[in-house]
Structure formats: structure tokens, C-alpha cells
Amino acid sequence: MSQFLQQIVNGLSLGSIYALIALGYTMVYGIIRLINFAHGDIYMVGAFVGYFAFRAGLPLPLVFFLAMAVPALFGLTIEFFAYRPLRKRNAPRIAALITAIGMSLFLENLGILIFSPDPRPFPRVFTNEPIYFAGGVTISIPQILTLAFTSVLMISLTLFIRFTRTGKAMRAVSQDAEAAQLMGVNIDRIISVTFVIGSALAGAAGVMVGILIPRIEPLMGIMPGLKAFVAAVIGGIGVIPGAMLGGMLMGMAETLVTAFISSTWRDAIAFGLLIVILLIKPSGIFGSSSRTKV
Image (tube, one colour):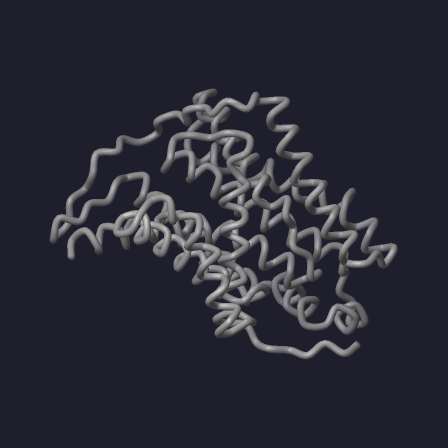
């Protein structure tokens, strides 16, 4: 029983990172119906910004600020130069999808060119000395930081979306962009804000992965990005609480499979869950079915 509880704790810390990345996918899809496949590589950018900031001796709050600000600028730039021209020309969705894949490959190869393909050890910020709880369950300081900071970010995002004027505009654009524009909402501004927020969350996740699993590389965003996308689909893509839940479920499933079955199944479980959810409830746990007129 203690081993099961231990894996639940480990799964929650990993799942919270997946949830942060999934939020970017689900926000962008909810606004412009685009799967931003470059999002996982924005997460990689955040990890490297954190790496160099820690190496420079900057304090932890400033490291997190930079690791969120720089990826936010990347997200804003990608939206402005890559996606917005397609949107202005009413390009088909397949063009935007191919552009997203192209941006992903561009960031990956740019990372290899600048940082080299070799993995780098992330600076040890905290000791991994475990804290013991009842029943033999342990939790480390990096895990506590990860759970605490991701919880703060997810709660802050929820409050922002629900109670601020910009958040309400984002919900309006998600429901009906044309009606929102007629009511005076600046669609381009809202889309840019969405990319900025999603990219900032991915950047924060990159730093926390570096602290939790101290090893980073330019291609580190590929598999977590795919898993976070799967988590968003499982929860109901376009639904923010669904992305949070999907990320937590993904993390717990991965750690439980690794601990009790085999580590070789840790990646397969993500896509196995996706298949099961699509067979049972194609719209996701919190998603709602909708019909498209053609």
C-alpha cells in the first residue's frame, strides 16, 4: 500500500507538469481551433532559460520570471509571424497545422545548433533529501515546489479566466469569435494574450522539470509535448479544467505503470489512455459533443 501511495505522490508531481503544458494546448485550441505542435518546444526553451539563469547565480523568483517571460515572447513571435498571416488570409486548417509542425522542427533544430544535442545536467537547486510521512511515503523538496507552484499557477489562471475582463473576452472569443468582435473585442489581441499565457506556463514547466529531473536537452519537448496534448484531449480539449485533470491522470498512469508493470510501457500508456477515451467519450471527460454543419 505504501508503494502505491508513493507512486501517487510521484504521479501528481509529474502530472502537474503535464497539466501546465496541456493548458497551453487547450487554450490555443479553444480560441482558434489550432493544435500548436510547437508548444512542447517552447517548454524546452523555458528549461534552457532556467538553466542559464541558475548558472548565472540568479535567485529562484527571477529565474522563474525569466523562464516564463522569454518563452512568452517566443509564443508571441510565433503567433505574429507564423499563424496570424495564415489566419488573415483565411488559409485552410491543414496549412496552419503544417506550419505548427514546421515551427516545432525549427525550434528543435535551432536548439541543437545553439546548445548542441548533448544532454546537460541541470543545476542542483535543492537537496533531494526526502521528507518522510506516515506509512513510509516520502516527498522531496523539488516535488513540494513543483506541486505548490503548479497549483498556484493553475488557480491563478482559473481566476484570471473567470473574473478579469481579458479572461471574459477570451471565453467570448472561444464561444463565438464573430459575435465577440461585433461586441468590440479585439480578436488579434486576445489570441496574442492566449499564446503569451500558454507559452509562459510551458516555460515554467520546463524549469520545474529541470529541478525535478535534472537533465535537459534540445529535443526534450517532443514526448512531453505529445503527452500533454493527449492529456488535453483526454480532459476535453478546449476546456481548462479538463487539461488540468488530464495532466494529473497522465502523470499518475505513467508512474503506476512504470512501478508495477514495466518502464517500457510508460510512453505507451499515454496513447492507450487516448484510445480508450476516444472510444468511450470522444469529446473528452469534460468536453461536450457538438455538430459541425457542412
